[in-house]
Length: 164
Figure 1 (cartoon, one colour):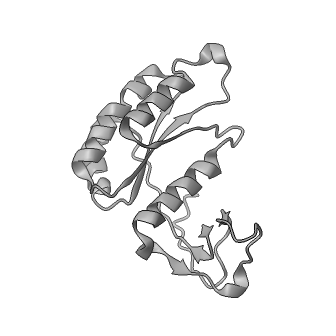
Figure 2 (tube, one colour; figure 1 turned 30 degrees about the vertical axis):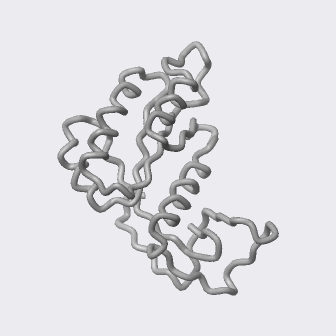
C-alpha cells in the first residue's frame, strides 16, 4: 500500500470473532499496531459482541494501538438490518474511534477503511514505513495525501503461502 510516497507493508489477521479464539487473539493484540472490530448489520449478536472484543483489545494491547469499527453487509435491504447506522456510529463514538459501513459485495468503503487504518497507524508509528523509489510514484492531487492500493513496486519481494 503506497501512502504519501512511502510503501507500507501490512499484515492482516482475521481471528474470526469467536470467543473460543479469545486467548489466541490476545497474542496478536500485543504486537498489533491496529485492529478493526467488525460486525454484520444483519446479526445483532455480532454487534453486541463488539464490546467484549473491544475490552479484550484494551486489556491486551498497547495504548497506542489504532482501533476502528467496521459494519459489514451494508448492501442488505433495510428490512434485513438488525443494527442501524446510528447504533454503530454511537458505539464508535463511545470509544472515540472511526466507523465505516462496508460491503464486500459492492466494495463500498472497503479500501477507504483500510487506507484510514494504515494512515492512522503511520501517524502513531512512522517507523513502520519504507521509502518508495521516487520514480515509482507521482503525486496526482496537488500534494495532498495520496493513497494507492496496488501491487508493490518490483523491488519489494512478496511472500506467498499459496492460500490466496
